[in-house]
Amino acid sequence: MCGIVGYLGKKEKTISVLIEGLKALEYRGYDSAGIAYQKENKIKITKSVGRLQNLEQKIKIENTVLGIGHTRWATHGKPSTTNSHPHQVGSITLVHNGIIENYIELKQFLEKHNYQFQTETDTEVATALIDYCYQETKNMISALKRAQKELKGSYAFAILNNEEPNILYAMKKESPLILGKTKEELFLASDPMAICAYTNNICYLKEGSILKLEPKKITLIEENETIPIWVTLDMEQTKCSKNGYDHYMLKEIYEQPDVIYNTVMPYLENNLENLHKMPNFNQYEKIQIVACGSAYHTGLVGKWMLEGVGNIPVEVEIASEYRYKKVFYDKKTLVIVVSQSGETADTLASLRKANKDNIDTLAIVNVITSTIAREAKYVLPVKAGIEIAVATTKAYLAQLALFSLITLKLMIEKKLIENEELEELLAHYQKLPIKIKKLLKELNVKELASKTYKNEDIFFLGRGIDYAICTEASLKLKEISYIHSEAYAAGELKHGTISLISKKTPVFSLVTDKEISEKTISNIKEVKARGAYSIVITTGQLDEKSDYYDDKIVIPNTHFLLQPILNIIPFQLLAYEIAKLRNCDIDKPKNLAKSVTVE
Ligand code: AGP
Image (cartoon, rainbow, N blue to C red; front, side, top):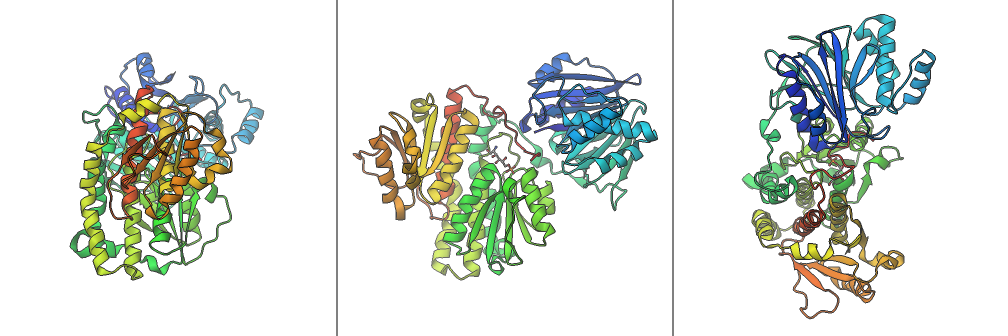
């Protein structure tokens, strides 16, 4: 999603800080980019559609102390040079992350005051509004305060005023924005990744902040704060390279043994000391899990674990629905939000909704400095490290592991687990990283990928927990290979969707839950009878001569609470191999953004 970088500092460095900053934000997804910088009391703007290299080719390297840059992920108006940022109206040039919800009425108002618009964007309207407020007062801080009152929606702005050289302004509401500094330089960014090559001294701007940056001088206007609160960025969180792998996604898949080790082990050491420090889950009568995309899918698995094993009712909600619906919760409800980035707009809004109603909230989150991590009452960190590929793999896996640990804590609190079974489960946790490593080493899905990559429809079937895993398997495939795919609860297929099964339609069936495997096998027979190319993924030793599958993948067994963590891995690799055969841009799939900061 959109990215912002701003710089005020050394004249020979500005353009490269902007370009390198934007490159560091590429992983978030974008379709156009642009920069603006100050040169001889004028603002120069360069913009371009497509990848950053197109912009780089257009940019003249000039000496300048001040500039702003932006990667745009289109919301209002198609990706085009005109619609891309920075936008300039009158004295004001700015870049924007977020959505201005009342831009149509503001546009009508501004048109009456002789403003004309060149683009389809909400951002151009915000630029004109700030210019209008500035022309009335000729004072930027007053202008920004006034604009703040008029603007509805979310925004992080980095702003230049061509009547005020060497000054960079910023303003934020509901979209992340950070300030960074060194002795002689000031930085703005929507994500620490953009500036971590230059500084680890940063300040997270609060809601409603207005910022004025002059050489070596910071003026901050926040509700209760005028002095920035500096924190040191954990540079380990920002290190990234492909480490010899062809794609970040593949590297991240192969990092999963370490990720599970790092996420789980701190809870198991010293007689489960940290597990016991988790909130007391037994005080709640209901859990609501709220998230988007893959994080929502971990919630589906979490529901199965918590209800089936932890014996507590769980509702799993899509955050974009939850934030606007009537929600039934009370003091006995725990709301768990799940997010890799910790910045997903709908998940954040859902968290704020529950916080506002004084409901206990817990965040399972990877980016520990994110807004969600800062605003939730309790936080369980996912120790996945930075995840670059748009398609999540290692963060998803670690989220599953955390749900298993919450369930374990609940089982202990409710005395649902005897000592012997606990010892056995802990031994399975210890062995899990090695099992994942072995599975990754031994799995070969290349042949299956080559048999299926030309299909335009692929189905995933499962029951119960296996179905929950299938939802993620299907999303992985869709997002990086652009193949249409659906995950179906195996028993539901014949209520309509089976009409789509024809000769050679690939159907991947996950059959690991022994209690209902016979039922799933009956459903597989139904699709096989209609000509499907049936591939079964199982932990069981299936009959070699069976007539209901054409191919199979065998996954190692573990404790049933941990089994889903192994089960998703073949599907991650399969999606990767299929996307590779289709020559897709695996790490940056079309239309997608890593962090969805607009609703
Ligand atoms: C995952 O592969 C997807 N790219 C996407 O569904 C993602 O899980 C979703 O946007 C939620 O993001 P979050 O975990 O950062 O909140």
